[in-house]
Image (cartoon, rainbow, N blue to C red; front, side, top):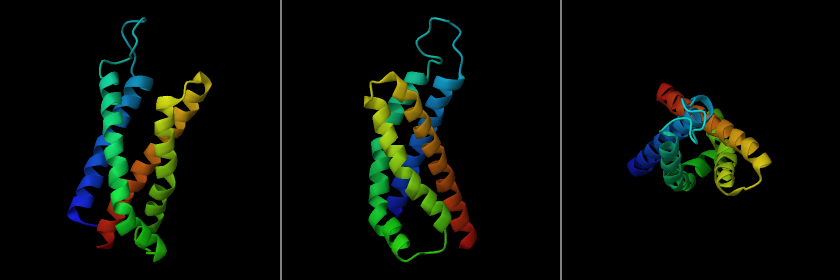
Amino acid sequence: MSRFERWSLWSSTLAVSLTGLGFTWAKYFAEADDPWAVVNHPLEPWMLKLHVISAPLFVFAVGLVTMRHIVPHLLNATPAGRRTGLVMVWTIVPMVVTGYLVQVVTVPAWLLPLAIGHIAAGILFLGGFLLHRVRKKTSD
């Protein structure tokens, strides 16, 4: 993986992860002082906007490393980082698909399950991503 690919993947993953976790906290765990408040925390809309802006950069970065890193490692059955790499590969599609669907679905009954799926896939991806790097450093 080139330095630019590594930088773009790490910076976009950091951006999308921090904004996603921040939005999740603000929306589902923060409590508003005003019972009539539309948002639970003043940062909630900002976290969402930054998350939606950083997500395409993240998808681009994943696409950037797919042909030179992911595909060759899958084809060669590279043992180093295989499990954590597979966690990321198998969670990326549900994470991206649910991320787009929560923005466009209008059926209220579908929104919470989509959001839960998106959050779960995102946390699994982030865990796999961080462990992938830790395992790589220990195998160097």
